[in-house]
Image (cartoon, rainbow, N blue to C red; front, top):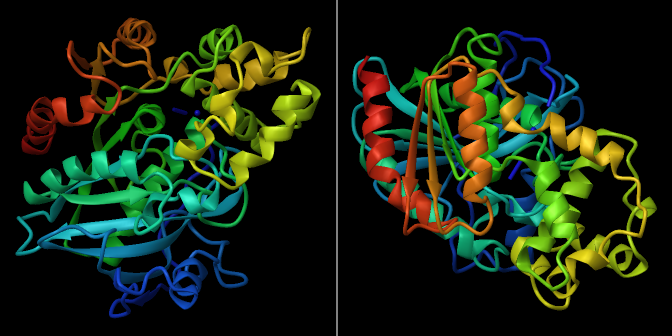
Length: 400
């Protein structure tokens, strides 16, 4: 799920700290207090290091274990980016290159934007491993990303700004997410110079929305890189309508757990105060989003146990919330590159009618859109189901 405003551009110049031989603790020791401290301390940037050109690396190190892929080399990366307001920020993620020699022009690059894991730091996908709170979801898309690596693509995966790193994660802030997606693409070439300058943005759910927002950046954000296209799988969209549907539910539903994430995301970029619109019961659950990932929020003891129509106070003024969410709708963007979009018709999270509306909005702007529907795929299943068509589409972009 996920959108906002464009900031200025910069060039590479700062010196880079790359500790390429350090290893993340292996799985056998990853659960110990010392190992956890070592892993999490990586995400705190040294004092004075955040300012600098976006897309440059603060530090990186090679990793092994669950967050890596077979027959490849993976780095954990801390890099500079920008919020939707243009403020210097830091994001984390991983960069993977296949084993062997890169083709002429360097490895073709996919910059992957993940779907909703949560807003708590522990939900950052680069922290994938024993005890990770969104393991069930992340393991699904990692299986498909492994296919991309095996097919000869480098894969960069942003965590997004504030997810794992200091500061709030502006959930569903499309411009901030797009910055993070584009900036890790640029940073990947510092970490692995064998990666080429041509890249494709790709994402699922929240990340599908991020990929479409990245397509609107075009070449302006970083002229040294060449964005060829964007692939959006079950993209989050129509946030205002979605909130309206969820708040009307007279029953409990896992989808209600997305509401506090959206509230936190809007709070991160505006003066919006969720406490002014929530019922007492919902207000008591709000802090859960700062501790658990989506799977935990969907439990009956948390947001999965509250009816949709019991979240907001009667007569609550949601006008400020709706203004921000409307600006984050990918249908408001003007993509500058071709788009591949995939939708599972059994999807109960990113609803097919919402994606149909988005497709109409993009086509009305004369976007080159390849829209594929999958009748038997649900929200997560569309990732694997769409891989063959997405692979052909991406290969054609790099061949042109």
